[in-house]
Amino acid sequence: MARNRYDVDEDLKEKFNVRSLKLCGRYIGRYKGQMIAALLLSGVGSVVGLAGPLLMQKGLDEAIPRKDMGCLLWLCALLAGTILVNIGFNAIRTVIVAKVGQNIIFDIRRDLFEHLQKLPFSYYDDRPQGKILVRVVQYVNNVSDVMSNGILNFLIEIINIVFIIFYMFRVSASLAAVTVAGLPAVAAFIWFLKPRQHRAWEEVSNTNSNMNAYIQESIDGAKVAQLFNCGRRNRNKLNALLKRRYQKWMHAIYVSNTVWVSVETVSQIIFSMVYLAGACWMNPMASFGVLLSMGTYASKFWQPIINLGNIYNNFINAVAYLERIFETMNEPVAVKDRPGAKELPPVAGEVRFEHVGFSYDNSRKILDDICLTAEPGESIALVGPTGAGKTTILNLLSRFYNVEEGKVLIDGRSVMDVTLHSLRSQMGIMMQDSFIFSGTVADNIRYGKLDATDAEVVRAAKALRADGFISGMRKGYETEVQERGGGLSQGQKQLIAFARTLLADPKILVLDEATSSIDTATERLVQQGIATLLKGRTSFIVAHRLSTIKSCSRILYVDSGRIMESGTHDELMAKKGYYYRLYRSQFEDPEKAAIA
Image (cartoon, rainbow, N blue to C red; front, top):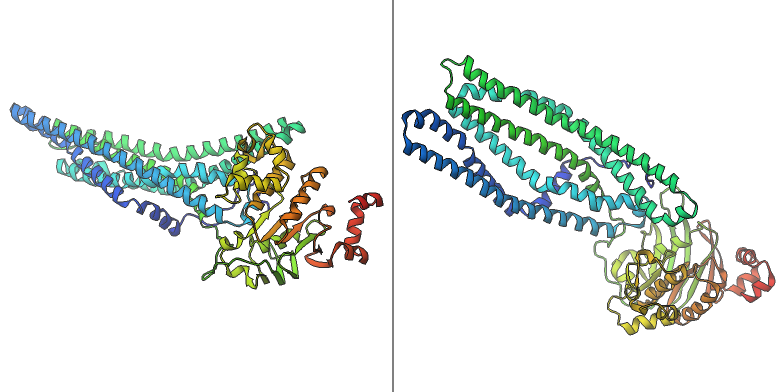
C-alpha cells in the first residue's frame, strides 16, 4: 500500500515499447486520411518553397550579369509563387492537424475515462485520486501535439532534408559535402543523451503526479486541516513538493536544451565553413550566387535538423506521459463479463453462498468456507468486529470482486456466469460512503433510476422520511447541492443516498452501514420506511448499531472470515455466545438495552 501516498513515486509496470507504439498507431490511424492529406500539402509546399534559393542563384549568376530583365522578372514571379504556395499549403495543413490533434485528445480521454469506469475497487483503493486525475487531464493534453503535429512534422522534416540535399548537390557537390559533414557528430550526441533525457522527464512526471495527489487530498481535507490548525504544516509539505518538482523540471530542461544547443552550435560552425570553403578553398572561387544559394540551403538544411531535435525532445517528454496513460489503459479489468455470460432473468431473490473463500492479496484469507442461504424476502444481518469480512461478503454478492473459491448463486445461477449489468440492475446497493453528486436533490435520487418520474422520486423520499427536510429546502427537490453534498448534514446525505438506492425497486437489497450517520430520532423514522420497503425483497444488512437489525429474519455473527453464529435476535441472545457479548457491550445498562 506504499503506492497510495502523495510522496511516493509510482513504479512503472511497463516501459514504452512496441505495444505502446501500436496503441499510438491505433489512435492516429483513425485519422490517416486527414494526416495523409496534410502530409501531401506540406510536402508539396516545402518542396516548391525549397526551389527559392536555386531561383535566386540563377538570377544573380545569369539574369543580372546578362541584364536580362524579362528573365529576372520571370524568376521573381516564380520565387513569389513558391513562397505563396508554401505559405498557403502550410496554413491548410495547420488547420487539418489542429483538428486531428483535438480528435486524438477526445478519443484518448474518452477511452481512458471509460476504462477507469470498469476498473475494480482495488485499483482505486491503491491510488490517490489526484494521481488518477492528472493522467486524464494534464497528461493527455501534454501528448496531443506529439501524436498529431509531431509525427507529421517529423515526416515533413525528413522530406525537407532529402530535397535540400538534392538541391545542394545541384548547386555545388563540394559545398554540399561540407554542409552534411557535421551530421554524424550530432547523431552520436543525441543518441548519448536519449536515456538521460527520458529518465529526467519520467521524474518530472512523478513529481507532477505527487503534487497533484497532495493538492487533491488537501482540498478534500481542507475542513479538517482548519479544525486542527494544520495550515502551516500543509504549506510546508506543498513547498517541499513544489521545490522537488522545480528541481526535476529544471534538470529535464537542462538535458533537453543540451540537444538543441549542440545542434545549433554545429549548424553555425558548418554555416561558416560553407562560406569559408566557397570563398577561400575552392578553385575557382564560387560565384556570389552560388555562395548565397548554398548559404541559404545550409541554413535550411540545419533548420530541419534543429526541428527534428525539438521534435525528439517533445517526443521524449511525451513518452513519460504516454507510459502513464497506457499503463492505466492496460490495467486489467478484473471484474468483467465472462465469454458467453448470459442475462440474469428477473429474480425471486434466493441467495446462496457455497463454500466461498476469498483473499484480497493472496496472503491472508478474508473469507474462509462461507456457507449460507437466504430465501426470497428474507433479511440477513451481518455483525461482528471490524475486519471480520462482512463487507467482503456483500462485495462478492454484488460482484465488485470475483469469487475465488466456491460459488455465489442467485436463484441457482452463479453471479460469475451472468452479465454485470443484468446482475446489478436487480440489486439496490448502498455503501457506507453516501456520495452526493453536484446537481439537484431530485437528480441525485433519480440516479438510481434515470427514467424515474418526479412522482416516483418524491414517493421514494417519503418512504425514507426524507421528504420533510427536502421540502423545507429553498427550492425543494430542485435545490442545487454541491459536489459531495456540501451544505447537507451527514444524515441528510445518507437519506438521499438511501432514497436513490430504493428508487431502483430492487429484488435484492444490500445495505452496508446504511444508517451509520443518522441520528437516533431520524433512525426510528427510517426504520419504519425500511420495514415497508424490505417486504418482498431479499436483503443483506451490515450494521454496527445493533438496534437497527433486531427485527431481521436472521443475524449472522462473522469473525475471522467465518460465520460463528446464526439465528434470530432472541435465539442468539439465549445462546449467550458471540452475539450476546457484542450486544451487551453496546448496552451495558439493562434499561438502555430494553429501550433499544
